[in-house]
Image (tube, rainbow, N blue to C red; front, side, top):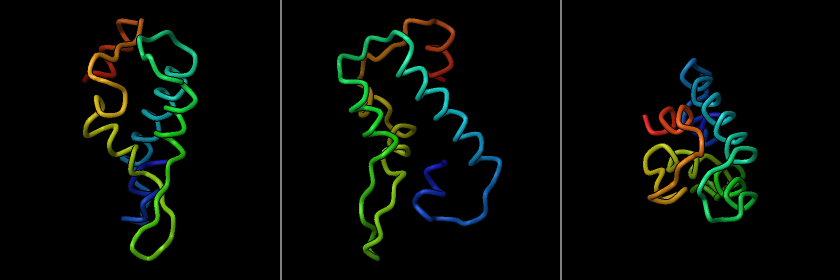
Length: 95
């Protein structure tokens, strides 16, 4: 699910939401099943990216914050030297 839909910032589901969700599906499976140089616990990182939630001003817990952070500053989530051991996937991820 896209970060905007999770945060409740808009209610109309768009093609951009679907494209963002596609990136998350690829990333989730790549982190979980493919080799990479991440020196962290994979389940913890997956939980941090995909399951993290925090209460908004209205007291309702919402997710999406760390998904947005992943796009805005991926090095803050995965590390500055993160690479997949698949050149095509690494090129795709570092667009």
